[in-house]
Length: 595
Image 1 (cartoon, rainbow, N blue to C red):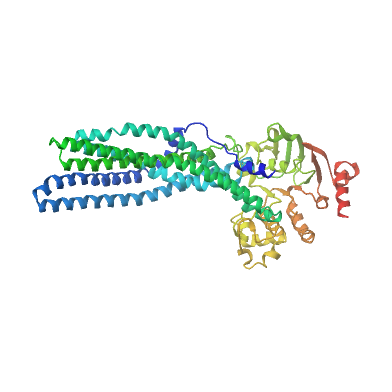
Image 2 (image 1 turned 90 degrees about the horizontal axis):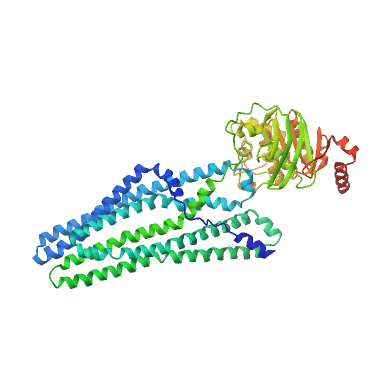
């Protein structure tokens, strides 16, 4: 089992198809927003590069004219020009760097904002099927990685290409034949780069996947740290993490090996070309056709010629490394929003509370139905309890009422309105759902209670808290309603979190209320005190209550026993007890266990 568990976290999904140019075209929409700033940065970089290109020419004049003639005045002027060319070059490039830092951060913000906005729209099914750590790494790490590629990377490609063109022009102005010697190394470089590019992309895709797996496992274990210690799983988890870390290290080293071949390859070709310049130049110089200054100048340009090529190689290297991340980001953005407003969706009018299921069938996975042709009608203001074995579909029914999933067939109507034809916001804003796992956000107690109604007054918050018996323990906290709580409310007990969730649900004033094991973590004494508040919450509202503690749902208007994909029996507590069916056996068994 342990080995199988490790293998689960090693499985990856690779993008086998070649990189699609549409990803870059799509990314260009983020770049266009800052075209003005990037154009300015490009002009400054080009000016800086051109200023630096005058240096070899100035050096040639110094060696061929000023030094042989012993003209100190000319030498001083040329030296001053040399210093100025470098100074202006550094100034322009420094300004450009500051501009591009801002552009890079702006692009990070835009991509991350769009990615997060899309994640907010994705259905429950998306989060059910994926480790949260894999989602997190795309929003944080991957976006950081691609931002520099989309800003500095693309500018560097244009800039270094222009530098290359300018260097070639300057070289040919100085000497044509030696310039041709320099260009002979280009075909060799092209063959080398074509060979390495595909290997790099595949290698960095593997790194992306392994890091994603590691992040997912790490996030899961941080959240489940208590369970790990309860079951003394520290050593086993350490082994799994070690396997994942080794896998990350192995794929990283493989990718780096290919990346590290780029600059030594270019550097080797550069050295060979410069050696050829001196060999050819010295042979020709004996015939008096080429001066030492020309050879030195061309050698200087040759060094500069390979520098933009090396920079392009590094940029290309970085581009290949980050293409896999860009693909993953857009893969997430392309995840279909399967539960969305219809094109002709209308606003749900104020809900009164009648709920009708007409032959509703639903499955989380294909060919595995959870509900089959379920039909029932719940009248306005009626309280309905859903009971039955675990996995029978009780929580599924209440999830479908809020349209967290799309049904396979049939219709769900609220007040006669098909919920698939109304906007999600107008539907869900009138629903109140209290889950067994009461999630508490980072912030104050008051902020958490106001989560569904941010504009609620302090008096309304206090009233809701008193109604559900949360006020008594909140007042005992160090800062009362202004007490700060951490993620998931780690400083609060499960019962306290459920009471805060009760207050939050009540404050949102829903027309239809769903309580899914809402009192499971509350002690019996508190539950009895809470019952009066619950009665107030349920009064005048259509409510669905899921509870395994059957004593809490005896007074519901109707109890539906859910099993085998449908409603096995339905009625009041007394009616179902008289039938002596599934509910009767469930209830009597539970009462015997309590006794």
